[in-house]
Length: 365
Image: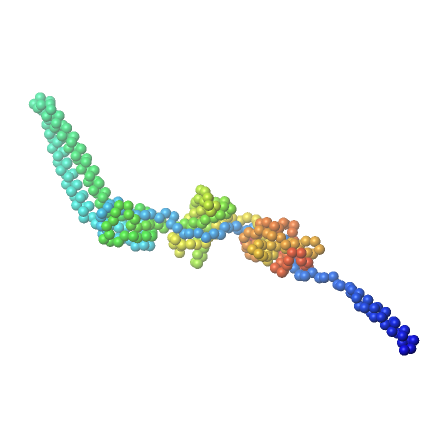
């Protein structure tokens, strides 16, 4: 091997080491770009029609249980069916009156007999008084005739009372409507022997219905007597108004009952279940565009702009929504800038690039 060749071999490791050192030099890395382009918005005060939504039962305002006051009497006629509209004093049912009419005729005869005895007693007493003045009759006999006069008068009064009772029993043979209303239940048939106090018919008084809803304590305290209620049906909402509130809350469920009077029931029937909206009136509410709200793991969040174009995830509490906005009850302040478009794709600490703020118009909803 020549000397020049030997020198080349000695330089080769040095060159290779230089090349390796050159290859291991870290190149300049460009700074990372924001992960997502977003828009932002802020809380706005919006006039909001507040309401409480709940489900409740439709029931009769007052359902009257109707029966007769006689026992052991057979039903002769039932003059109404379920659903019939009736008027006050209208005859709904008749019992067999034959025995009652016979009883009344008997009492009328007894009254006539008592009156005849009364006439005789008065005549005898008048004669006795005349004889007493002339001393023609013993005093004891005179006193007896005068006493008989009073007995005859009492007998007439008693016969009149018994006859009045017989007439009343005859009146009880007709069951009349105590008020205007609609027949809701019929449990009696012609030929049935009825007992006193047994339920024969039920009537919804004045065909008046009400919507009853159980509200939790936090909502119940917001409702006032007279508040408007929309009872929702397939044919559209039916107006009602709060007539009464339960005086206290249930000790176990911590709920109170709202009674809303339905003036015109329309298609609603007693026993139905219907959703309703209790209107609380207009109030100012702090709202965000609904797109800014993200739901994860059963909670609701919003992303607020932080330092260095990063976002901070905040848990929030929300209220009702209207026209693409949602009320924010807790978690956001008026000074916060909140991510609107693109919020669903973010995580806590992500960097973003803001394009433009969301423009919203304040108005009544």
